Length: 107
Image (cartoon, rainbow, N blue to C red; front, side):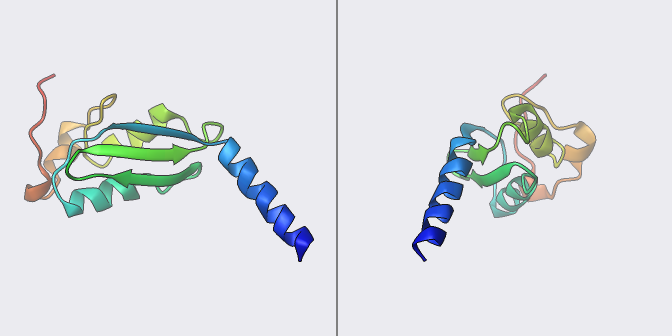
């Protein structure tokens, strides 16, 4: 039992050592936005993705050896939401539900 507990501890330590946490702004409005934004990051290398509706801030914990921060921003933009680094295409943004359409910054 002790050996198993020690192995589990080493695995958790090794995983946390290889992770990076980033916080950045993602525009959106509602619970449907939250679900879509967070779902866009259910991908290899991302261990946690949480978007705060009030502050519009996304916190992502990921392994930079498996996924880049740039790819994380692209994944979010691909489902219609602008981030600090990526702008969603107009086509994808226009397909969002009415309550999810946020005020976009001019390019």
